[in-house]
Length: 343
Image 1 (cartoon, rainbow, N blue to C red):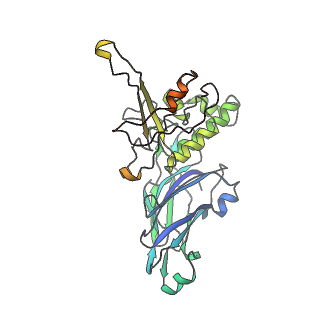
Image 2: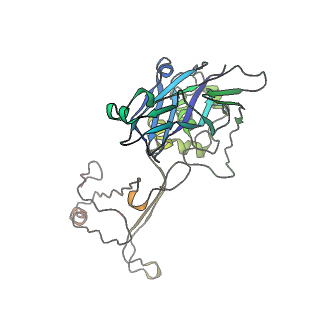
Image 3: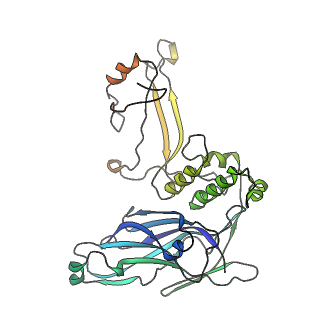
């Protein structure tokens, strides 16, 4: 029986009949193992899906049947008939994530959770909005491993899948491209990178003299991985970065890929740009993807916060106007600055 830690599951449901509510709650087995280091969910985005990621606090979590988390659904007005919950295992890996990443089973496989079929009647709908029948309990079943390979039997409902795990090697070069947020040098970004960063932070605090210090020293993160660890781009790698990465994995925040500033230039011949300063930033979601939401429903907001220690500019900023016809957004002048850039 194998120990596991980071996991990512997608619960799929009928968006015309159900709506996920109240967030995700820890299952019994996470609570009994010191609660979760990380447990986050993205609900109803897109409609019909709940994405849940988590990292158990302890590294000795295993068992035949584990209740990891619960998700509650509200029955939509007018919904009737039979409803089914399905889903996919996006990521489910063994506890040791420092030397390499070992998937338990094949990522992307289907799963079904608990008693997933239930009927909605008009009578029940009027009586209750959320019932126990609409709570999805994700239960993972592990079986003994063969001597030379790890195996996972995922048995939920009528589905029975026996798959072989694969050990992912680290590649500091990422010849095919590296995802923003990749901290463990496997070139891809997922919940494992958040867990790996948390482990790194713990060992760095004690100068890599802890229980996993030698594992890190034998295979230190690349410069690119260390840069990605500083997810909030404040030049310090700490536990806030681990949480930032976890939030990025469920689409709650974004990665700042670069910022470019073109200063104003005037009366210099060919380089004259009409005394216009240009600010440019590239902000991407997980997988190096731009925000794919509709142009009138953007979920990504970017603020350019301008400040100066030159008091003569205070009135100029206050009197500034938004005359950028190509820009989406609004000019705000109600922000009070403190510190060196105080205005």
